Length: 315
Ligand SMILES: Nc1ncnc2c1ncn2[C@@H]1O[C@H](COP(=O)(O)OP(=O)(O)OP(=O)(O)O)[C@@H](O)[C@H]1O
Ligand SMILES: [Mg+2]
Image (cartoon, rainbow, N blue to C red):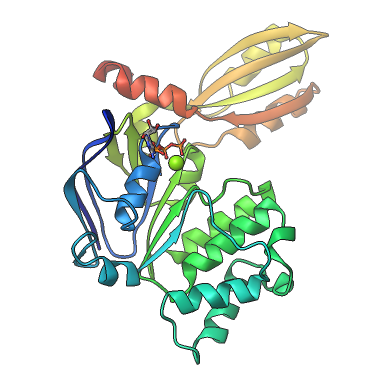
């Protein structure tokens, strides 16, 4: 559905993208993961025909985005990084206007607009002015705008930025549900987000692709185990001994002490989710469980691993 071949882009002397190639199959949700300045937005702007590449080519639904930009754009929905919204328009009027720009005919527009508003849960505020909306709601209106005209391909640049935790969950579920019928590329800084919504992930760093894989394979490659952090009130050595006996636990160590509380980091077998057993072990021994959480690798750590040696990746 999307074919990117040897894409490069320079701004003046600055190389923003260098020889980027990947493809996306119909119905796939592809995550574009990378730190600030990696080239995510640049790639998306080229894919949507807003920015010409310096070299290389992109095909969307069989159309070259430069030479057949009108055809290609007709099949695209785009949520840009900063959404140009019209503050003096109501949500409904704005979406109707955008649908018109996208060439949705007058008869089909009210239904299309209503559907997009429902999918992104802004329908209850249809008549509210955009200028008076919170950041999260504006983001949702941007997403609604991308869905208009029911495009085959959706390009979403950081779709969950600015949303509150509840909205983030809703947005992720919405995006996940878009796969299958739509082909989706979304960019993010957040690794767990990719695991939750995407079938495949491209990691980009400094304008170059450093890895393409499924989130599971990538995570497994990057860490042979997963970590859980616990804060426990109890006798340190006994707690440690008990934690080490919990099924799937590979190792446990105490990090910090204070006030009779200790923070423990426990490495568990990948995919085992030992959190419940760990909680039971602590509470069942009569100690106080103050906190328990999964610790995921930060993107920085992943990049360190990917950009150092192969051995570091395997370790
Ligand atoms: N219009 C521009 N003129 C000059 N340089 C630019 C321009 N747009 C982007 N760049 C540079 O290109 C590189 C890639 O930027 P890009 O916006 O694509 O990164 P990004 O991955 O989207 O980052 P972020 O996570 O911060 O959104 C950066 O070094 C940036 O400074
Ligand atoms: Mg960006």
